[in-house]
Length: 200
Image (cartoon, rainbow, N blue to C red):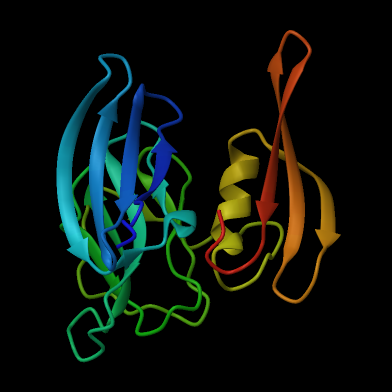
């Protein structure tokens, strides 16, 4: 019997030595773990029976808050089966909860430690809110990369110093885009981002 290999995605705080590990697997389950990069220690967060869309999620610059888009398919629940939320990292309990009801758009980006952009698209409802952080309704990304992962993911990459240098069309749902980021001493990182559903 083949064993399922978990998928790991890490969101890094821009202004603190912290990261949030999103561990997907076993099937249909996901866990969050806080990584203290200064001490190289890990603090377990929570499990979710469902899916967190890593490429539509973000960690605040100071590493304190997690903005994420999730789906569990319980369409009759108060979260309507798919939702955007803000929690204290590494936990998933929502300080602010925005039911979506579908998987178009959702998630968002941190603009500062306490302000964020919600990838609204076809609209969220507001079930719960908090005064700890606030949504900036005026912020709007300069480019549009579609209603799914790339609408958040590409803006997160560019905010964090990556430049989109090449866009290539491979086939239906299989675009290949190239990002580059200088890291000093003549070195440049290159990232090939496959713009197909589920890729990272």
